Length: 123
Image 1 (cartoon, one colour):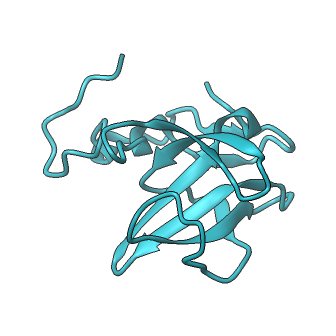
Image 2 (cartoon, helix red, strand yellow):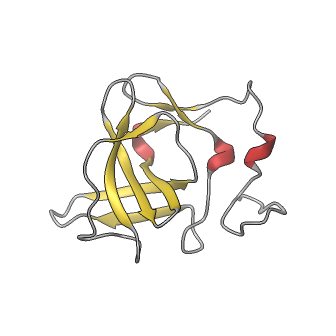
């Protein structure tokens, strides 16, 4: 179980300021491109992991991250069927192989990444 550190944001599970260059990255399962770090895990609605179904009935288990430098926006933003109230979403893909990794959620100046856990390789 993750321990919440003393940070200014209660959603943050660890302090990204402690991220070191040699910290192993979380990788794209398809191409092994670096996507994000454990330090970027966050809680949304008091959970890191969420399970959702899209309008077509496909079920996804996602983890929430404050940053994912290896994931890029691959669609226009939409408010339809957003899993997080008040957030728009856009498809997020691997910057290297363009495999869909999840969604990028935004609301004003706030952005986070909901990444499909079985499309990632954790250290």
